[in-house]
Image (cartoon, rainbow, N blue to C red):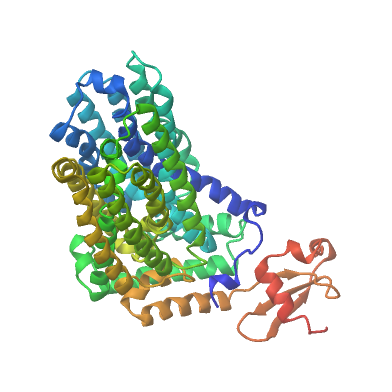
Length: 554
């Protein structure tokens, strides 16, 4: 028995508990959109003439610092964020980040010089460090079992929603020439997601897995029952989830004991996890996407595109394309599988970037305008392959392969890897582009080949498993099987009260799910035994029971 045998297989919006749950998770999802807005806004502002004029057209190392400081702020927060998340809960860590980001936004909008601007972006990065560490954990640990893969994949894909808004806001304010509001308005709008979270996060439930780790079992069961079973805390799905989580926490404690950052590198299972997580963190930024995303203005100059309006328009359209492809990838994670998406993504990026390098060389060396046009098209093709795997799965895959006791710390390591990769990009890319132009792309071609070999060799498939079973895969099949058996045993012995099926009116039936027999049956009062309107109104778990026992007559 697995959770697939017990879940509601109807439309989720018709299930009140799941509907409320997904609406709650939206508040955590917008953290990624805020990150996308903050990160992408700098691309747009660097094209806005008033921003360039006000801050003295920063270039070289100063421009590198403007772009890198937000990630430096994230790095400062990363060692503290898992402690806050594990000690005080996912919600409080997310709220901490939201409050800090609001302060940074206010300072940025009021900036009077470039270093004031840099400091405010560092503060925004500090808040992002707390928020981006806890938000995906809350989503993964709270999501309905069959929706965990897609909805967690949507978290990182939502980055592009913020990116799109930033691109189009800058495209609009670009026309407000002669006023500082052309860059202050985008700066202020950064704070909108955090403001929404500060106002509404109080109504979002805490992670049941965190509650169980704090021995607050009753609260965890109540949340699982309310959002996964419409308030029925005795539902077999709730019992199975509770038992698997509890068993996983026990096994993790026995294996690891006291948890620290050193725990991440102690066992062979954890070493395998860290190898993949650190690699994916660097791959997510060193695949050539960093070259396009953060220095697209310099690339446009290389290709001879000088019109600010055309540059902002292409950038805005690219973000919409990225969102469409990323959400498409998120919807495929449980259909196609994680490993397949990674392999297709890396193979496609290698091919697209190699051809892009050739067209860039043709334009710079021969002035071939057709090659320049093809170069723009290839950027879209490249991001199509990047978006189907790295946008949805960078966060989702990292979190699901980590057991609870090291999940926050392991996720912080991935974020640390991303930040280091970004900082290197933001200092090296402008210097390399200026020095050797299109030849710099050859370095990425070689790196993309290495990425493909690594992904093909080390990424394992995780679809079709619960969060606890997925995390246990790296510790051997025995651990995954033990968790599955624990959940099975608990659900098997759960007593399910089913009411009035066809000619069995007014009986309360208790069923042993492991054996094809009914072991208790008693008559109930007619007023309490009203039959349901139709078979469709019953839970899927009950419908399967009715099918199994439809041959019995009493």
